Image (cartoon, rainbow, N blue to C red):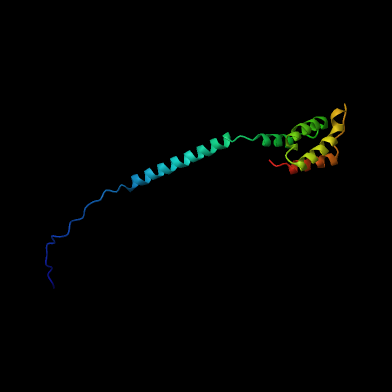
Length: 132
């Protein structure tokens, strides 16, 4: 049997306990990420709320939301709101003038019938050619 020889080692340091601070760094990083995320969500919500509609969009929305069940009021509203877009180009002016002429019988009569399909077709065509 061999005997072990105990040789002292002078150039090797004994093991040292290293403090583990990684949990603090991970916590700090999580807090920073949460603050950035919360500020991004807050910015997005305030941006969404503060985003105003342009005047063109407001007039276009008014044209889209016309209640066609009341033909007299609809004719006046289409004429009024449609005039805003009439002078964009020659095509919109031509379609508007045609539509305006077709809406005349619905405006000035005391009792009017439902708006006919051809006039509604011109109305939808006019909505289609408007650039918002």
